[in-house]
Amino acid sequence: MAMKSRFHSEISRPRENQVAQSLLRVFLVLAFAATSQPQTPPAADTLVSPEIHADRTVSFRIRAPKASEVGLFGDWMPIGKLEPLTKGSDGVWSVTTGPIDATGHLYTFNVDGVTMTDPINPKVKLRQRTSASLIEVPADPPAAWSARDVPHGSVVTEWQKSAVLGRTERMLIYLPPGYQKSSARFPVLYLVHGNGDVPESWTNAGNANLILDNLIADKSARPMIVVMPAGHAAPYGPAGRGQNNTELFDQYLVKDLIPFVESQYRVSAGKQNRALAGLSMGGGLTINVGFSHLDLFSALGIFSPAIPRDFETKYKAALDDPKGTNAKLSLVWIACGDQDNTVQYPRVKQFAELLDKHQVHETFRTIEGGAHVWPVWRVCLTEFAPLLFKNTNR
Image (cartoon, rainbow, N blue to C red; front, side, top):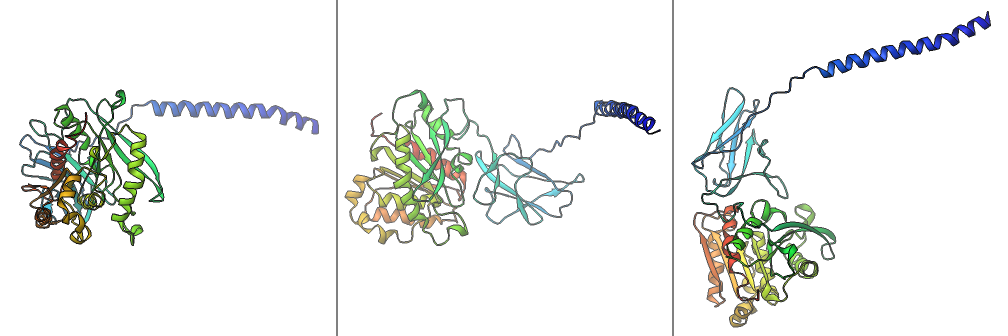
């Protein structure tokens, strides 16, 4: 009896395996049949935002069916003002603006008190905190910052372990068209962003690379290398509290950044081939570093600057020796929008007048209707770059 039971057990296992395999085959067939049936894809969201019209008016839209209030803020609007959007029966809020200047602009939505980017616009302005959407209103004919059919330079990201900062920091470097195939050396413009921005800001929102491409193609500007460093030498926000960003950036630029660039790239030697410029905070840094190191830079571009409050006392020696200062600085170019309430246009104008009073040569450019916005700084770079390196060897 025991032998019979053992024999029965041994012959039953193959049958059990056969049943399991049959069930598995049935399951796979059913699964394949289910997945091979035509699937209905989800309906594509056809919402468009922003939509630029031929008359440069722009429609902005956002799908927010549960929101109770939605507003739009754009950098062409007064600070603090929100343009209300109207809600449609489909849950889409929309507004169409009046004509907007043909350049790049930043905008955000405010949904029930929460500021946010446009969810369906992939173009975003990078910042230290928060972000904003970007819109490019095309110019006809194309502007200096437009993507034109000309030879283009390249923009590379470099990382450097900074002894001054005690961290590895990045910089963006614009190399003019043909740099890789050439053995020539080039002058360098160090171009600094504003408060809350990042090294990418000058290309991301300022279109600095396109501006240089077009100016060089038009033979309006010398081919040059443009270095866009991190202006926040002290960490942005609470982590940098108690540190003097101006002094730290000065050391970083002079001790780390310039030697790194000149060791890694084909740079023309001498201060006559070196210029410094910046916007807002970067403009203030340009003033401080430029006047502290008259032996390093031949030209300064000071765009909508945060004017140092102690400039007159800190740089008394440079002001009291205008002949020496003018011999060292071939160009001091200052610009600001006359509607700039951030750094205060009258204060920037007074700074230019202070230099005039001490007979330090400067050029002051008022940008009419300009506020503290990227459209102004695009104009600044477009007008400043052609003035550089005029008397250096080509």
